Each structure stands twice: as C-alpha cells, then as structure tokens.
Length: 218
Image (cartoon, one colour):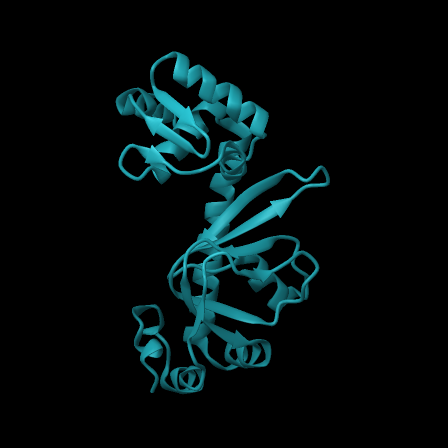
C-alpha cells in the first residue's frame, strides 16, 4: 500500500476503500500552479496531503475575493458540488504553497461514494466543515467592519512583524476593494500602528491591531 494512504486523514476508511485508493499516486504541485478555472468540469476529488490551495471568486468587475483555503483534512466545496451535482467550477484554485496531493478520479470517487460508508462520512464531514467556514466568511464580509477584518488578516498572515502582501492581495483576502484597503492602511499608519512600503506592511503596534480585530468579533 502506498505511503499516502497511511495518512491520518484516511485512517477511518474501510479496507476495500483503502485498497482502491492505494493504486493512486501522490502528485507534487508547485506554488502558483492553477488547479482549475471558471467553467472547468470537476475531474476528481482532491485530497491535500501537505500545503495550501486557495480558491478565489472573480466578479463581473474583475474584483476578486478569497472564498476559502484547502489544507490537509479539508475539502473543496466547488469540487464536491461539481462531482455530486454536475456544476462547473465558478472559481479559480491556485496553489498558495508547494503542495502534495492525490486526485481521486471522478469514476473512482462516485464508486466509493456508492460503496463505502466510511468514505461517504469522510467526504460529507469535510464538506460540512467547509460550508461552515464559508458561512463565517460571509458573516465577516457582511457584518464586520473593513478595518476590523483588515487588522485580523494582517495579524493572521504576519511573519513576525512583517506582512509580505500587496494592497490588492489584502483586499482580495478580506473581500474588499484595493482603494478601501489603501485608505484603511493610511489610517493605521497615521495612528502609528503600521508602516507601509511597496508589497510590505510592518506591524508597529500589535496590541492595538489585536484590540481592533477583537472588536469585530463582538
């Protein structure tokens, strides 16, 4: 049996399902590679073993929003809907880091859904968890002030005190527009909370940013 099937992610599967999956080889996907585009047909179910895949939605004006990320133990809502409901992809998936994954071809996926109760539980549990995460994203975008979302995202992606991201990338991550993020960062800088350079934000008052981020959770 190949090593990837010994992953804790698949430990609950029955023997026949594991034997079927053991025939599939793990793939290495480099950072920046696109896994699917809008209009593509779902070809299989992806199990992420390591790394992070980010799924974006682009609106009619060209504005993007980060819908969710897929990491080990998580599933892609759009892929599951495509395989079970026949829907084409409406978003785009990009490898945010180097990734190692396994693609379960559509016929194999459907056969396992029909014949393996543990596999069905695995798929639906991951799907439910992902849907709950998407609801949280919608709640934040709809009900949390932009400055609170921005402060929380800066703290989340900071490496030490440094955030390496453009203002357009930050806008995509929090579901806003670049111009709005620019104004909010200017406000943060005027208060002494951050300093900004091209493609980088330095966090100079982390406690203040934490208080602002926490205010958005009330």
